[in-house]
Structures are given as C-alpha cells and as structure tokens.
Image 1 (cartoon, each protein chain N blue to C red):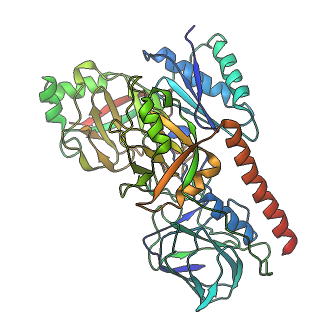
Image 2: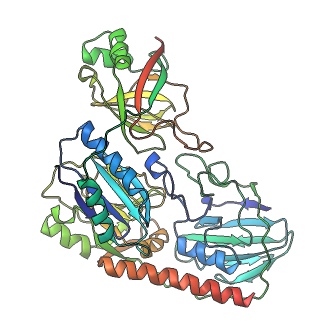
Length: 310
Length: 215
C-alpha cells in the first residue's frame, strides 16, 4: 500500500493507456511522458505497461506501507526518502514506513514514481489509467487527493542492486509529419507553422495544448465532416491558433489537421510547461518509423540489461 | 463506384474519406470497411467518423502502403448485403426539469410541445458513429421540422442522460458536461458503463427509437 500524504497540483494513476473501444469514444489516456513511465517500470523490474504515479510539478509526499523498490523518472526534481536524497532515474529500495518527498522540479513538468509490482487499482477497459474526463479508471476515476491509499501488486522478485540509467535528452523541439490538410493552408501559414516559437497557453490540459503564435490561415478546402483523431494531431480551429492533442483527447474532431507529432516524440510534449515555447520540425514517414523503432529497441536493450543486473 | 481517398495521418494512422454528400448507404459501406479491416495484421483500431474511417496501426508490424492497398481492395469488392442494425429503444422523460428547453424548441419550430415530442419519437434514427464522449452517438434522422440552433449561452453543466437538439442533430449526453444543445428530455438508461463489455449502450449502425415515458 502507498499512502498519498500530499498529492500536489495534479497526481493520477497512469499506465500506457487504453487501446480498445476507441470506436465507442473511449480516449487513450495514459502517461503523458510514456517514455519516463516505461523506463521507471523497467528499473523496478515491471513490464513497461505497469501502472505508476504521475505527478504534475509538485511538491508531493507519499508513505510506503511495505518494503519495496521504486524509481523516480520524468524530471530532475529533488527527491528525499526520510530526508536522504534519491537520484532520479535510479532504482531505490524503500522500507515499510518510509516517507518520500518530491520537490518541484527545476525543469520539465511531470514526474513518475514507478513501484515494483505496479499500482494495483482495478483494470477498467483494459487499462489502469485514469480517464479524468469520463471519470473512470485509476483511483475512482479522479485525481489523487491527500490521504488516498493505493494498493500495490506483489512483485515476482524485488530487484536489489542499485542501478540507474541516463535520462533521455529532452528539448522542446518535436518532429512533425504534415497533416492531411497541410497544403490547404496559405504559403505564409505553412512557413510560419515551421518557423514560429509556439507558446503553450494556460488553456491547456491533458486533452491538449492550445498554442499561441502567428495566426494560420487556411486558404482552400471546406468544412470537414467529423473524423477520428489521435494524440499528436495538430488541429487548427478557425481562429488560426493550433491545438496539439494529447493522451486524454477526444476520439473524433472536426478541425483541419496541419500536422501530426511523431509517436517517438510525443513524450517530449508531456514535459512542456504552461508558457513554454515549442518548435515543430519537419520529418518524413520513414524517419518517424525509424525513430519509433529505435525508441522501442532502446527500451528492449534496457530491459535485457536490467534483467541481467538484478 | 465512389472513390475512397486514403491519406496518412502521421506514421501510425490512415484516414479513409468518401466524397460528400453523406448518405446512409455510404456510411454503411464505411462500417463494412471497418469490419473487413478488423482482421488485418497490424491494425490496432478502426474509428468510423461521418463519411470516413480512421485506421490506427503499428508501423513496426505493418506498412502504410500495404494497409492502403488492403483498404482499397476491400473497398472495390461489391458491397455485401446490409443487415438492418440492432434496434435500441430509449425511454425519455420529455419536458419539465428533464427537458428545460422543450418550450423554446417548440416556439422556434412553430409547433406545440406535444408535437415536438411526437415528431421526435416518430422517427427512427441511425447511429452514424460514436465520438466526443464515451458512448456519445451521432444520430442521423432528425425530422427537418425540429432543427433548432444551439443555445446562445451554452450550459456549464448538462446532466448525464440529457436528450438534446443542436442544429440538424439530436443526441444523448452519456456524461455530465458543459454543452450548448437545446435539452428536450432525459433518459435514465446508462449510455456508458466502464464495467460493462461493451462499455456503451450504442454502437455504429444501431437503430434508435425514443419512447416518451411521460410529458
């Protein structure tokens, strides 16, 4: 069991999300920095898709009611276990009764705590992720509150050797493939899309970031019929200010799509703070698939290396 | 034969789009295409929209070009005989607290409240696709006489189960949400239940009839 003593601004139970029933309007949800959660899980001996805790900024405090093993990933936040500093992206043993304090990170947005065995809230529609909008999954379909208690699954074995990995290099530039309506935007709009420093506005949440920058004018094409969308899609409503869809996005939309952030760079979006600047760089489909293959390969290599080191 | 246009949406999805105008016959072929593609290796998800279909796939296990070819091949096959969709009856309490905008809709349409309810319950609707919320069905078949613009001021909270009209659309809100539709009634039937399999009452292709519980 883990007790949440202080949840901070927005803490939720997340795994890698739901991939079923999207045709019934069920959003993907899941960790916004899926790479950080996957790496944390591997460090503690879990499968990549085990459920962990996602904290937004911080600070946060939790207490462990059992011996276990944890890893903290996602940001460079200062973590202390009963006052002793813990390095992020490392595996750490915890003892019954110990208290973990996470300070607000200096940079990046979301921190993950992975626990050996995984957070054992019941699965809902194939995932333990919290769907805040529809109010199900995670713990009672809501953000965590002070005093919440979370069940843990018993791990097959507790890895004990202290070991860590290098944090993935993060920056606020993401690779983008042109969307189906890209060429319907004016030449000036297309140029501005790739050249601008887009700012993440406060009207942003886990469904999507609303960006501020030059107005993107669509010259051709009529109103679109409602169609399926997915995280990473960059929509442009009539006002010309784009919206990047994130994990909690609706399954369908109606705005023209100027681009799509590649799957391998989605995790970078999850670490952008409100007010942060964001840049889009063009990419090719082949490079996008190669980047995804490399990311999965690195996780596989990490899993193998960590298995041999326990 | 209507041409199916297939465009990539990032490296993990394809949009299959039919030219306007939308028709029920075209939409039925969209559902058939989704059924046909469901068994193809590497396909993860098929999301019908209005006159279109999004196909989500794992690019590490299949190629966009192969799936495009498979979708075109399925499309070019003669359409199968269309079975009538499942009929779902939805009991609605019209007017009063459950449908606070019924009088406004009646006034806009130049009908009495009774006539609005009668026309709304007479039609048989078809679920074109699901989106916006878990289990939110985009229904075709609203009587032209009932088309009513959305409210000038959207409500901050529309209760779950509310039945509304927004322009040429009618539908049911599965979950409490802000919303701008004119609310004419409410159903007690759960439209979305995350514990159930399937989790939503309605699916693409279903036929829907509203039954007046009281006025």
